[in-house]
Image 1 (cartoon, rainbow, N blue to C red):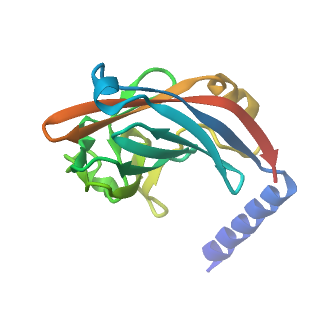
Image 2 (cartoon, helix red, strand yellow; image 1 turned 180 degrees about the vertical axis):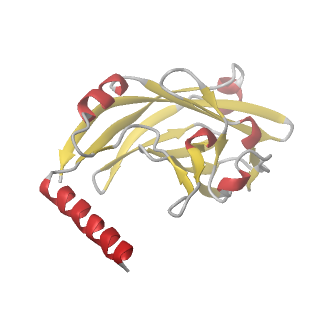
Length: 212
C-alpha cells in the first residue's frame, strides 16, 4: 500500500514539474524537392511535375506523370502518401526493394501500414494498385521500431527527427543539423514485368520550435 501511494505521489510530482516548465515541440517544413526516375521513364511516362498544395494549413506535395499521381505528406513521425495508378494495368509496390535513405545517406529497410511491428524484418508482399485505382499508405524505417521490456514496455518507435524537448534538453542544438538536409524514399513500382525505381527526394526547408 505504501509503495502504491509513493508511486502515485511521484507521478503527480512529475506532471507538476512538467506543468511548471514549458514543453517545446519541433515542427518541420518538408518539401518534395525532386523525383528521380529510370532513364527510359520520360519516354514511356512523359514529363514529370511537382505541385505544392495546402490542406488546412498543412503543406502537401503532388508528383505526377503519365504513370502515377502521388500526394505526399512527410512528417517527423512517418512519410504518408496517397498513390493513384493512372494506367490501364495494375501496378505493384515492391516493398522488399523499397528503402528510406536518411539525412546521413544511410539506407534503411521500410515497413508500411498494416505490417505488424513484430513482422517488420519479414518479407512483405507487394501492394497491388489496380488500374485507375488509389491507395493510402505510409513509409517508416524498420530500424526505428524496437521492443522495450519491463512493466511499461512493449513495441515502440522513435520519430524520424528530434521532436520534443523535456527538462532542459536543448532542442535547438538537436534540430540544427537537420535544416536544409535531404532524405529519400525509394518506391519500386512494377508494371507488367518492368520495375521502375522512383526516388522521391525531400528537403527539410525549415524547423520551428513552439512552446506549450
